[in-house]
Amino acid sequence: MTTISRVTLSQTARRAARVMASPEVLHAIIARATEHAEASGRTGSAERQPDGRTLWRLDRGRELNRLFIVSPVRPSLEVLSAELTSKSEAVTTLDYAPLLRAVTAGSEWRFRLKANPTKSLSQGEGHRGRRVGLLKDADQLAWLTARAQQLGVEFPVNRFGLPEVVVRDSHLVDFRRGTATVTLATAVFDGFLTVRDPELVKQALTTGVGRAKGYGYGLLTLARPQGAEADG
Image (tube, rainbow, N blue to C red; front, side, top):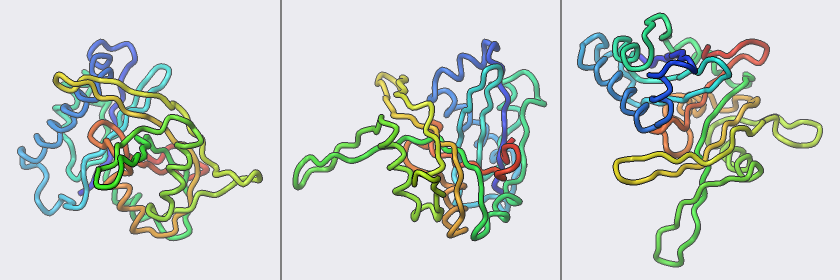
């Protein structure tokens, strides 16, 4: 059973601040939470969606931060509470099926996507292209809109002929992975979309969009246009 979980983290909590500073640490905690859930036997094999994968995204706020996790198994409340917050009520997990059923052809949604926009630079014939991050807002927006058909969506345009999508929090992220430094281009997309192919959209919701999914990229979430966040 695919689930979506929300973990509320305080800006001032020392434990949360340490974790939020490293995508590598967050990745490890989330992996432990899902692996512990499977090992504990609380989620039977019939509940697991084999085509899904664990995705996560950290949304930072002024006072509170929210960590969203979409996973093929219900993550361990004990692990998430122990590692991220001292309050068990700060972790909420819901069945993702109702939202997936609501994704129908022609339906309109607000969306948020934190992505790692990249392109491949040619290294000459016979050589594999070099992957580089896109840093300009216009290039990042073009990266997203070029994937509309692949995602099964259409991005509505405004009177200027531009997609109703805002690119924000665009920057480079550096963190340690073992003895190496990982650098990733980051962009958060907020906007509106119309579903054209429900199955492709559901696939994007459960398997992610783009690269670097293990480090908090690729999680697409939807909300009804007139309401609050569907994921929280």
